[in-house]
Image: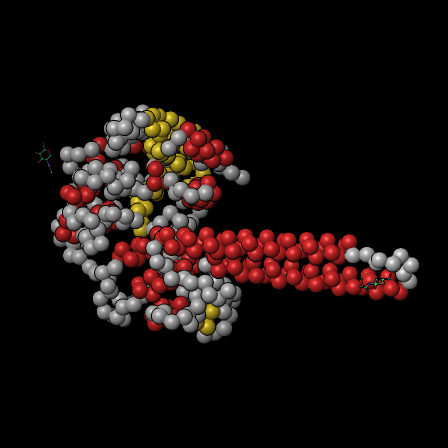
Length: 420
Ligand SMILES: *[C@@H]1O[C@H](CO)[C@@H](O)[C@H](O)[C@H]1NC(C)=O
Ligand SMILES: *[C@@H]1O[C@H](CO)[C@@H](O)[C@H](O)[C@H]1NC(C)=O
Ligand SMILES: CC(=O)N[C@H]1CO[C@H](CO)[C@@H](O)[C@@H]1O
């Protein structure tokens, strides 16, 4: 059991291993079910061949049967324990095995449990301090060890893309490190609010690990639905028209949405916010918006920060680090499409609901529904939350690639109800 290899090669290998493991679990389950049934059959059809048995013998037979049953129960119990153990290992819930070879010393040090000097803490009830690190990190322990190999108090390796790779594999939060992250001189930052629409210099961001080495290059790329062709072009492009000019009936403008909130919209959270223009337009209305982004194929975080806006570097697999009912508005587009099982979107939607205050808005902005079925599923999900539909627009647009196919988009302004 302890032989589960955590060495991660390419994704394919990992997938194959996962499949093998789950087949192993299935086979084990099957075998245990079959054996159990055979035992049971044997036990219950087990009858004396000679009919003129004495009560004494019958008793003996009875006790034999109960011995058998006890044996079966023991078997089942141990199979269940084995299964639970395998499941634990599959999910990566086992705690880190720090005795393995090639574990970075810094990782050991960071993860080491420290007994509280004064014993049990009366307020929290804990007796030892544990370092906060995503349990899924265990599945990428080799990459993690690489990440934790550095010189203490020296410069960190230039490895932000390794860190992001770990995050995308669910290793979040990452462990802390004791080295100095690579820094770039931020020359030419403008004061707020001029900074909101001032082009950002190529020189103030780290380009290592990225295909493009300039914003010009990025502007010619279709990075995502939120950032396609020119999302870093702040002047004379389409980026500056977003949220102030409606290009289709699916586009709502900020003034119109704020008017629905009659002055109560002051703080917001933008999910998958591209280069931060939603937050920029909101800032002009004195609404503070935090933009959630990772640096996938582009230095989004640095760009947003250079505009004088707040980037939150976190994947959508992570519970939002905000308290319940705090935001007046949450804005999200196709970035919400997390894929996988429907429950995955469920978990995300419940977390979004959690952070919106009663009466606050959820602005679903041009959510791309690959097909009608997906639109229906999303609609059903939203309706479960009992939001008031202040606006609800299903639109079709021609596929941007020019294939002539039309695509379905959903935009809505939903108001969270007061639940008692
Ligand atoms: C934007 O367009 C105006 C007028 O067409 C031009 O004067 C200006 O130089 C352009 N700015 C940039 C950054 O391209
Ligand atoms: C934003 O706040 C400033 C300072 O209080 C004020 O002068 C300005 O009119 C406000 N802008 C909007 C759009 O409310
Ligand atoms: C296994 C066993 O001991 N079976 C006994 C059950 O009872 C009959 C008599 O009724 C014996 O002949 C069997 O040997």
